[in-house]
Image (tube, rainbow, N blue to C red; front, side, top):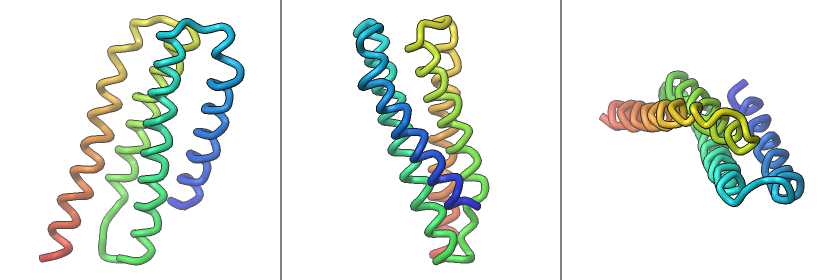
Length: 121
């Protein structure tokens, strides 16, 4: 299931990146395009990270990834989603959600680090 979710994230990241490059640039301000690009960059990086996490879970069966995966996925939704929405011209007040998404992604990676350290011991 984790690999399928990762693959869907990557497909969506490509789709949104293409829209930003071809559909959004003609109608958006420089700031909106920059928000879109930042969202797409983070989406790709973290979707690839989720794929790596999913593969790791198949190789190192004792390494728990569930909470890391869930937190990172939620972080993608809130961080990238809020940037995408603002880039489309919707309320800039959604910027308050962006750091929450970032914090969720950070927490997911830190939990992975903690679990990896516990696994090595």
